[in-house]
Length: 219
Image (cartoon, rainbow, N blue to C red):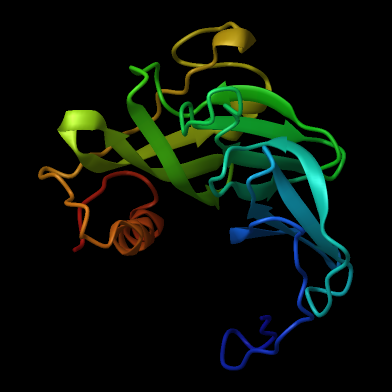
């Protein structure tokens, strides 16, 4: 669905189907009238479909080269560079690590440039990222499962020019780029029956208002 009146009304686009399981999509505007939609699948890669008329219609879906387990990825455009936060560990097929890749050719090829989370034991899981661009900063919120420690919400504030140039507060080696950023944890454990994604959306709204300076749980 698309809206050209600030969300007052919406019009339905054409329906596109991937030849495998699909769901939890991400939409990114890539300049002009061009929009790209990404969806999770069980194929080991995100699938893309593109629109050249501002989302009125979408073309035939195709398997991208962006590695991903069966988990959602989030894409954002920073100038002419596309940035994706995703789970690329298709060898073990687990949601660890939560990584960042970039594309400078409109999503045709991707280069892995770092991980959002610091190194963690193998029983940790990271997924469901949300990205907000604020000038040269990228605010990333995501869901963490840490075994017996339960579930929580994490945040990172990343300076995009440093990210794209391979600079990190943890290491100056592009092959070991772990992004420290700002982090926030709920003081109490989120139980499985809680609406984790709903809470994530509310906290993301709080981030937007606070400009990433400080965070608070908003229920």
